Length: 327
Ligand code: UDP
Image (cartoon, rainbow, N blue to C red):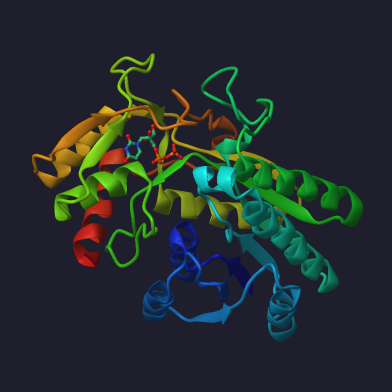
């Protein structure tokens, strides 16, 4: 059985759909602080899942799950993920993302479960010396969020050496899109991400879309990111589990498309896909934003055989379908 922590959240729920499509037995663990019970209910209409409400900060909650089910492998998404909030409230991030993960790992060891796939982030690299960024780039995270994930990466490497626990660390770049049928999608409160903010501004005139800075040193002056489709990203987790089962080895992979798209380019594709004239305002830079960031994803392509199947336009189309269904 596969335990998915944070399975009621954005990337977690899409990965659950992928696991169900591949005939896996799945138990979802989520405290529903950022995840949604509606998402769990939708997942239950797609396939059979067990749902356990609980919090990683309470080791008894995790112990209860491991005592109830025979867990073979864990996919660990549950985390807080707002960079700005992490600067203001680092304790929340270290307590949940780092200490909570230690509770999970120790419970896994107790029950002899020694395989885990971990959602890490390109935020662990910090300021970049070069792009496209590969897995060997030095890691100097600049936010408590990035640090809380980086610490877990180090803990996992130490747990392999000491206890033989095998981990696949996936460092995500930007994530976009939704389930192809629009059943589940990106649902954050508050929403801070680019694509949902552009699309939401179509439905809610009070949410006028703002471009945060057009004076960057990039071809059109706006920031560049690497947007990977959420269903493609879900597939990377499936391949990571296959690798763990076959090779029984720890490894680390970037998950990105290797394409950089500017904020203006994303905005233009949103206008094209939705066929709407979306109002836009140029605002000042958002603090902490990096100018340009995209992945070298050669390693995951060669070692796991992962290849992105969907374009940015596909992601924006599915995200729009979700926004239409949801609002
Ligand atoms: N962005 C923007 N307006 C928004 C949200 C985001 O201009 O309402 C820009 C942001 O400054 C960054 C890019 O879009 O350059 C991607 O931001 P997002 O928050 O989606 O992801 P991040 O790269 O920060 O993880």
